[in-house]
Length: 252
Image (cartoon, rainbow, N blue to C red; front, side, top):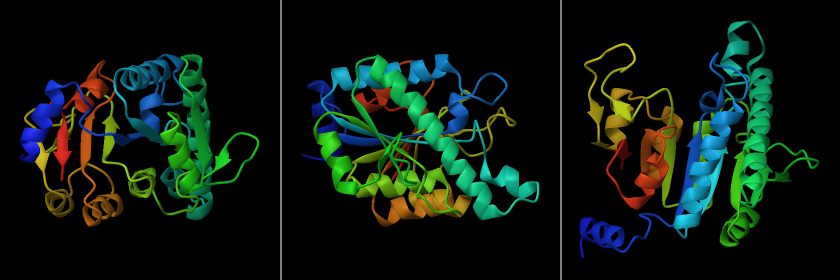
């Protein structure tokens, strides 16, 4: 049976398209209307989407969160701060977002674990690959925080690396602000920008398409890890993507 045929059969039987996924959520997606801080309403919306997916489908899910709603390393660099110091501050911001998401998920009845690349035993486990996989096998959602624990790398790269480490079938890149996927131009400034539904890794890298940073995109290509870019904040989209509905952009 072809891949398309298998996808169709799985959709007909109600099985998810993938059985282990990693969801990348930018910090900006959690922000209040002013673009900063944490919106409890948005975090609860995202958490409810995740819980609904876990309730309906038998799949393993991990999450990588960014920290741009609290601090972005390049903001400090632009003001003259040392790059490494600024990036470490950004890693700490991702832990704050991870703890906020964990609290909301657990209030909704979903067991979770936060694993941080920066050790802080009072609030999170250290990142240990085999332990993370065991948590997933037990039905817990694992939230990876602290980036990679090293400066000069984005949370996009952390998401790509963690996805491969836990043997995820796909990396789901959740967007926000009404951006539905990858376009041939910036849809926020060009109303004629065209949504690209299916693109190759090489197209993403050579054309500089805004999917993930180039390091993350190249890593996904080297490990044949597909990426789905979609609007996470549109209700029902996460469930639709996992059910096999063709929305957003598939990079493979």
